[in-house]
Image 1: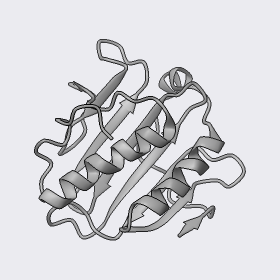
Image 2: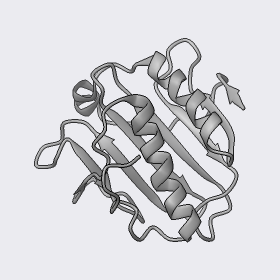
Image 3: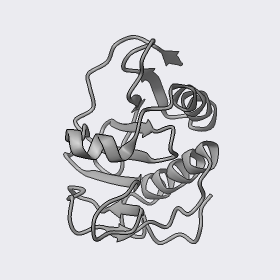
Length: 162
């Protein structure tokens, strides 16, 4: 199901200097991603934009999480410049992120590993595709891999998903 109602803001907000590098948000891409997520992932309970008129974040609530997590959420941001952030968090306090944006001393496409998705160090991301639908499918595929296996081991080890 989809909703444009207000939701709790993502705790993945970036400082002003990073937001300038990230670029303005692409509302059309967020709506396209929302529809794709709802159609592709059966564990989606709700996919909602934080603001229906000027969305900054798409929050995808999942009815289950990896391992012992009872629920999870993936917050997605997508910019007009093609930069993105897909941040997973769950009820066990575990986080990871697949990002694509300029970051000093790091590859543009990078992965913040679990369990806490630290700002540093990051790893090169296994996701090399650029288009919003393909990146979305890749993120869902990697999440589904972790979910099916009940572990985050190997989460960033795929070769060019999806």
